[in-house]
Amino acid sequence: MARITASVYTSHVPAIGAALDQGKSGEPYWQPVFAGYDFAKQWINDDKPDVVFLVYNDHATAFSLDLIPTFALGTGAEFKPADEGWGPRPVPTVVGHPELAAHIAQSVIQDDFDLTLVNKMDVDHGLTVPLSLMFGQPEAWPCRVIPFAVNVVQYPAPSGRRCFKIGQAIRKAVESFDADLKVQIWSTGGMSHQLQGARAGLINCEWDNRFLDRLIEDPAGLAQMPHIDYVREAGSEGIELVMWLIARGAMADVAGGPSPIVRQRFYHVPASNTAVGHLILENQA
Ligand code: DHB
Ligand code: FE
Image (cartoon, rainbow, N blue to C red; front, top):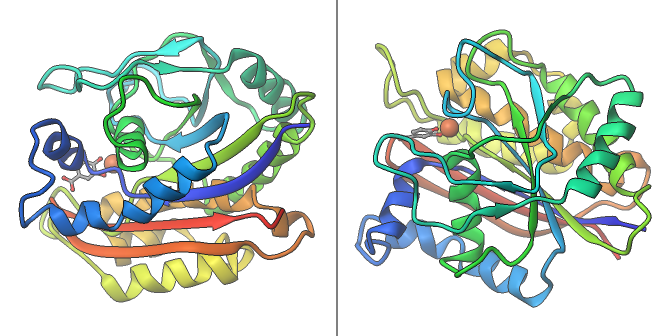
């Protein structure tokens, strides 16, 4: 059977991708950001997943106000890096896993979550920057990736409670797939940032770190937090953090298993306009 071995959480700031693509990762501004991912690169290289189920949000790239799916599952065979204004990032095409994705669609939809199935879609920095942070700059991504795009751009976005529950349904789906696959689930976005209006540039270190504490120790309680708290405390784009409850909901302890091992915790300000947060939680074997 397939199993979820670990969850990874990380910010997905586009300027991080640009810094890497333009060879600036050693510059004093960027060096401490990338250093926070040295552990992750070694960790993932030591025990490569077969598939990453990658939760992110599209930033009006593949979708627009014409079409706003709340939860969009990438069921296609491949996904190309999107052109976000400076041309597509020079990173490999993302290879999907249509068989596992179709199984997840069957299981999660029959579990009462209405997913949008997407066979053709380009993927933006929300998905490609986390791949770069974790894998560096390979010729091809070393595993398959199933994109899972969550609407946190146009209200109404899904609640933390619903994200936590869909994570549990995704775990059930993965662990009923009849193939010996190591699957990781990643959630991206956040932490505190606001890109617009009078509060542009907002960062809230204390709140972010409390969020990390609670994500580790009290995810069910954290899932009850209303949107207004995210937006007031972590800024208008801080709402991306609700997606972190999806990966957390997919961990073994939520279904009655043992607590996860905290392999890495990293927090750094600033990267562009954002507080970078990163966490690795591993299920006990
Ligand atoms: C920034 C951060 C984001 O998460 C994003 O989607 C776009 C921009 C930033 O800090 O610049
Ligand atoms: Fe974003």
